[in-house]
Length: 399
Length: 102
Ligand SMILES: Cc1cc2nc3c(=O)[nH]c(=O)nc-3n(C[C@H](O)[C@H](O)[C@H](O)COP(=O)(O)OP(=O)(O)OC[C@H]3O[C@@H](n4cnc5c(N)ncnc54)[C@H](O)[C@@H]3O)c2cc1C
Ligand code: FES
Image 1 (cartoon, each protein chain N blue to C red):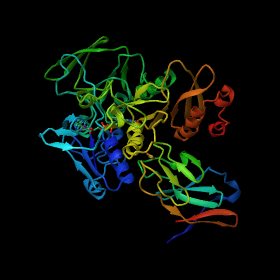
Image 2: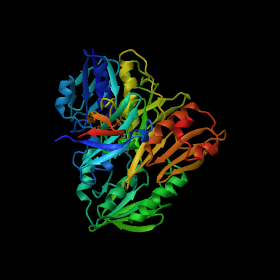
Image 3: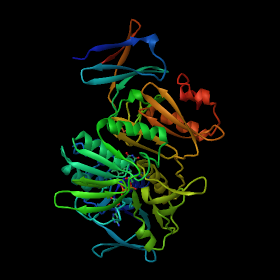
Image 4: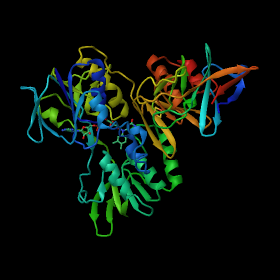
């Protein structure tokens, strides 16, 4: 019995290792396009840019660890096609590999900027270790860096770059930082950290064209023109779901799966960020988080072995900027009433629905409250505002 | 040379709330559990975080950053992203004062 996994990133590694833990016998092939053995991406926009070469958070094992686990790791191998009829994948070099079951763990890629001048070599994106090294090599004191997008990755890069002495301007179409995932009060705190460090934040500012000049890039925006030596585009990710679509598997901005990772084809599964997962509510949601790449493969590995361990975790992700750790629990929704609970420097921002139930939370330097809050959210009980916001009542007493 | 270091009087410990002592470069977190006192290294083995800032329950401590879990009695890393166990240190109560050995 052979399971082939396409994509040797975090979700691919997790699926392979968890599967080996459940089944000592089967043949496991892990195929990845990158030259690097699998690694976790969060350090790419953090420690790597600040000059650490091998931060522990990469979780990067050397290739011998795969030999020991009897996982055949094939690096630098791009899969070009899936033939579900004959149950084979085709590699770029033409070789075809047969599978009994297939896991697509191809992740996502950075969204490009669809405007003139965006193909200049001074316009970069950040997704892979190679991207992070290329960016890191260019960040030096005095460099004028423009960042397109005030989302998680854009702001982490801005934070690292300003700490390295670059002159940093962030251009954001929307009206605040990380608007997709945090409420206004949290955005304004994050903006304060950036401005205090010297980052220029421009909101309501759309990039319309890039004029590559010899000495610099001239950026045309809805808020005027600026010059930059380098532009980092961080405007979101696009799922690598084309292989699945071309194979006739159901896709909708991500590969549609059930809670166990099954796609519309019985032999094919999807793991990690490329999956659009059926939630208990019946809706399908795609997550761009470390969490989904770490934990959803548990469901996939079990399903591959014929057991059910559906993935239904409350969404959770984090960002680290200027020494602060921000954790985001649940999906952000502007329909909630966001209330602050401060315990000194530690902060919890709780999103309550009309019935007084906590539906989401943002924690600043307060990770110890994540588990109590997860339980409070899961319990779905209305809790009195007064008790929730009283810092002398520990949250763990409320769950 | 191993020495015993004072932490705090026995009565000052609350369940699930560690006390932290710095000895040179080492930070040690000392916990009171149902069956006695336990001392572990306070630094998560995944990246870097103070476990004493984490959530503690049923003899386990959860890292405040990425939720790796450790067994306080044995120091064992119970799940990814931590894979390296924590150092543990012997403890004793001398004249009503909790101590650990380093
Ligand atoms: C810079 C950065 C910082 C981040 N920081 C955080 C953070 O702080 N917190 C957080 O929660 N999340 C963070 N994330 C998100 C998180 O890292 C991703 O959601 C996670 O990497 C998804 O894992 P994955 O295995 O699904 O995809 P990936 O890690 O992208 O792995 C997919 C792999 O498949 C390969 N592949 C694709 N197509 C093919 C093909 N046809 N053939 C062979 N191989 C192929 C790719 O090359 C890639 O190696 C960050 C992401 C980035 C990029
Ligand atoms: S630093 Fe502790 S789990 Fe990551």
